[in-house]
Image (tube, each protein chain N blue to C red):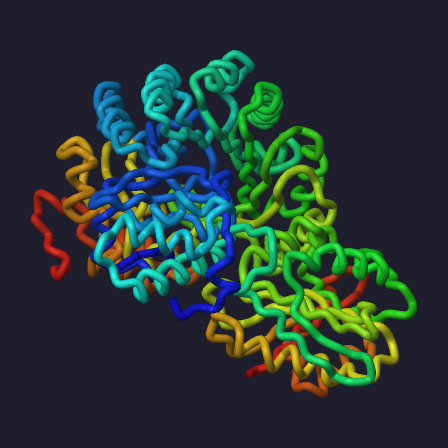
Amino acid sequence: MSLDKKILDFKPRFKKSNVAYSREENDGYVSFRFQSPGTSNETILNDTCVEIIKICNGQNSIKDIVDHIMATYEGAPLDLVVKDVVETVQKLMRMQLITWEEENPFIPKYRIDLGEGYSIYRADYSDIPKINNFFKLVQIKEDKPYDNYQICLNKYIPKWSINSEVLRTGFLTDMQYIFMLEKDGEVVGTTYSVDNNNKCIHTIISLVCKKDILCLDSFVSYVFSLIPQISTQNLTGYRIHVGNEENELMNVLKSTGFEKTLTLENEIGFGKDLLEYNYYI
Amino acid sequence: MFEFNYNKELDVKQTQYYQGPLYVVLNITNRCNLKCLHCFNGSSSTNQCSEYELSDEEVINVVKDVARLKVANFCFSGGEPLLRKELIYKSIKILSSHGVRCSIVSNGTLIDYNVAEKLKLLGVQEIEISLDGNCSETHERLRGVKGSFEKALKSVEYLCAIGITTSISYTLNSWNVDEVGPLIERLKDSGITSFYIRPLLVMGEASFHKENISPSLQQYRKVFKIMKKYQEQNYNFEIGITDPINHIYNLRNRVINNMVEIQSNGDLFPSYCIPVPIGNIKRHPLKDYWDKGLNRIWEFTSIGRLAEGIYSNKDLEKIISNIKTEVKMDFDIIDDNILFEGTW
């Protein structure tokens, strides 16, 4: 097997509790309906996929699963089985049907050093406490954020929905992108965005960073140039809905190529407009 | 080697793998005890189906067929389904014993504590109650019968107390826009699981009253803002706007069909939004229709063409009126031996 050892050692666990309904169909197929999310509802799997699901219990590694399938389907070509097992696990992951304990090899960290103590990496499951602490520090849910920080928050995202549970669910797929900017090991900025199923527009949920960050341009450019390369969607652009507040972050977005495409007057209420910014890749 | 399919990835050939529909809606009666101006089934002004209504025996036969197919959800709708309460009890008993999830869409006026308790005991999983205002004047102006508002509210209270998942359906019209917020607040601690605002579908009875009751675009936007405000409050229930034609986008893209709507006279519709009968349960069992084309009905030229033109409620309105005037209605995919290449 010519696969990365990290992938072979990866131990996925199928979320059985998420199965709301299943039925045996014709020709050995099994249909499933999952509790959440909507995108993974009404899925039909053949017998080999069902076989994989049965042993995705958090104890068996990808290698163990491959061995099991090889033993069950005598004579199956190894390369094809490896490819199919990996693809199946990845698809289950995108449907938020897999959990895992340790680092997920399918979600690389994309770590990069920007110099002068700054570094960027893509957050995963294990970074949730760090992200939460940072959001708490900057008071992202308050009407007035902490003075030392600036925030662009998508006005269509309810503030209460930015919590551990939502982050955790998001990390069960590779469609949620949170990049962390650190200075000498301390978090000083984040970007938080998501792919939309079957849509080519990537939605930005929030951008947060400390004031007077030297490499803000590089941070934003790196993230927005990387996402289309690693996204499984065929992205054509980014979108964010913000209020009409001005800050350095907004200026950086505009200089990166974000254009105001729509103004919805008094959309937020209290005379405040909502602005839609788009960036076309 | 492996096939893993969902959404658009599902291949046409594989639609045959579904042994039956996943979702079945049975409009168990077209009769109703209210006179709603916005009824998309046209139940309030006519009893047209009542003489052709499926008999108790015919309903039980359908229910037994569906129970054998182990569908994911069987929904009783109408008319007001609880006008055939005893038949619903019998049906739910059969469905529950086969592990089929059952739900009911009701106006709530016939649900007292005893009915709620009985439904819970029989295994009903979810009941959707229609509330179209925050006071009797508004609700009853649309629903045409005095006392229906208080009864609907009481039914919500009983159902939540009994522990049945209860959702609220709020059909938006030009008279009730300002009552969305107050009603959400009234229901804050009621125990409901969801509150969904539904756009008005200009079909059935609603097509005769659209000038009076259709909300304007500005009113839709206003309600959208109100809804966002309440979503921010993080109440114990979901608040949202449903898109009644969402399933059409999904099904026409996926080709595969997973649902069927059975009318009170036995007619089979691909969707409540496409009221074109493609067979009748009195003529052949559901399973036969499924295997002989219902499982691929969105691929069928005429249905597919209708669905392709629907991108909004306005499109739906136009298409429905065209169906009435242009499309041949007496049609059966089995008896007429219609091949999928054919048109009609």
